[in-house]
Length: 211
Image 1 (cartoon, one colour):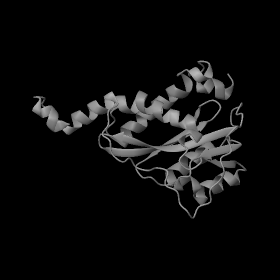
Image 2 (tube, rainbow, N blue to C red):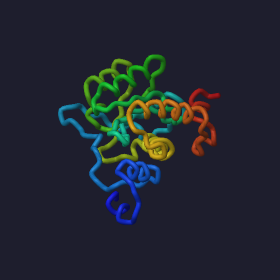
Image 3 (spheres, rainbow, N blue to C red):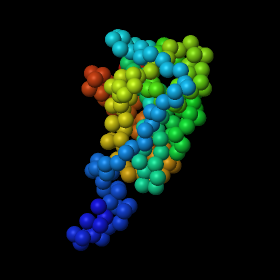
């Protein structure tokens, strides 16, 4: 893209092109990191949300990891949402795709509240004994998406789309420090001030806390 733009007479570098593409939501087609690699040695759990009427807060939580592109590298975002209200219960960032940053957010989320059901995909972070053991210790029923069934965790997939198109792509963050500060402000906005059509134009916080 840089080469073609220079041929057209534009004095641009890779950084400017990358930022412009992110702002416009354009990206090169290439294999993305597979964030849901399973470990055959780990125990898998059945999907418990199919056909279930989720009609109250803390009945079911869902969690996932997504890839965050940065001008200077990349990072990973882990988030936990309440299925009923879409409220972001907790989140964490890391430049490593490991279990530890997921555990940090999970432990914080369970300090005061806990769901009846916790749903994830079959990624190695979520099937690890460390992660499932914590849920079982709290008496939480573990649910996992069917293999290759992204829609089993549809609400958190929608969250990723919203976060990226409203915050990550337009801002073109350079590094993890900047994106952490930006996401802290964004999730505050998302939970408390952004109305959702699917929630009758209430905010996730209004629905989650019943206000």
